[in-house]
Amino acid sequence: MQTQKLPLESAPREIAADADAEQAKLGETDARLFFDAIEIDVVDSMEAIEQEWRALERDRLNSLHQGYDWCASWMKAFGNPAAVIRGRSGMRTVFILPVEIVRSRGVRVAKFIGADHSNINTGLFAADLADAFETLDASDLATRFSGALRGKADLLLLQNIPLTWRGRRNPLALLPMVQNQNHAYQLPLSDTMEATLKQLNAKGRRKKFRVQSKRLEELGGFDYVSGSDARSQHMLLDQFFRLKSERFKAMGLPDVFDDVETKAFLHGAIDIRDAKNELFGLEMHAIQLKGAHAGHLAAIAGISRKGDHVICQFSTIDESIGAEASPGEFLFWQMIQGLHGKGVSLFDFGLGDQGYKRSWAPVETDHYDVVLPLTARGIVAGAVHRLVTRGKAYIKSQQRLYRAAQRLRRFAGV
Image 1 (cartoon, rainbow, N blue to C red):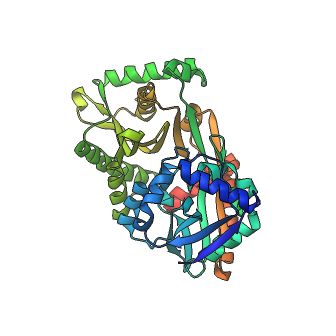
Image 2 (cartoon, rainbow, N blue to C red; image 1 turned 60 degrees about the horizontal axis):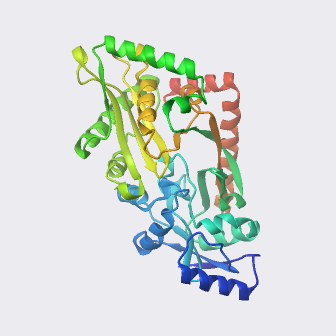
Image 3 (spheres, rainbow, N blue to C red; image 1 turned 120 degrees about the horizontal axis):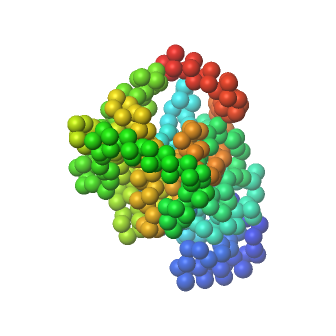
């Protein structure tokens, strides 16, 4: 286990010592952090630091995707080597970056656990460290991370990080970064659905909902399926995999849910439940038709929750029946409406620029990738990542180019 010390320009040693003692005495996680060094090491086992991990994840501004159970479900399914980066002040753990090592074209890449299926990544930081991060020396921080990962990886690539999340700056913003080509889209929830709709084109949104309702009723009616038992939840997820695969095939796109490991990971996420802390890993919702088409699933979505933040992880529709009713958008209305009065203040549509997201979400959040080469091979891989990411961002900013790229991708089937 390699350990690195990170200097801070925050307070004299005697003040830092007094503050550490007081912090330990009070046991408060949000007290101001006074110390003159952080020790950084890499832990190869999640289980070895589970207690510290769960203590940090209780902060609601730390992403669900860095939660212990979420990461454990991924690691159980994929089995990649763990290289969890830990920062400590004395005996206190002040941050954890859940990282796994994956190989890509011969390069060892240290990435957030489950990064390929994460909509927002923050790492796990103590609130007082996040509040005082500007006292850190950026160059020295990069050096210490490099030292801790020496021999384990060629490139540290931490993706989809908002520099500021709900008013809190992320200390990772001090590391070398490139803006990710994808943005995320959010809808703040007010006390009532009517108040929430005032942020949008409320009149148009209500009219669209009435039309969709009428068309579904003409098909024989519908049931909004939510909060079902665990067995039904797993069955809905399997139905999602089937429908999404068919949709990807029709669009000429690769199925990102096709592998056994991803399916196992998401089934494991369904079983993550913590009612006391208002948390669930994955919950399936659907619009199911009645009448002549009884049992037909017109739309399915999976959402996650941590505290007052709900994320739509994925969704799909079956266009074979009732496509004119826009069942996908109708499902979003049902989910959003149903979350009012349940302590939710933010509905997150996740990454990716799509028309329905823009129509629902008045808030757009930029995401960034940490790109920190650790070896000569990592320098090349990092440069390629920056180049590709900037190229994708440029194409997406040019509508004609973006549409042409989408057509080419469908034609090539990649």
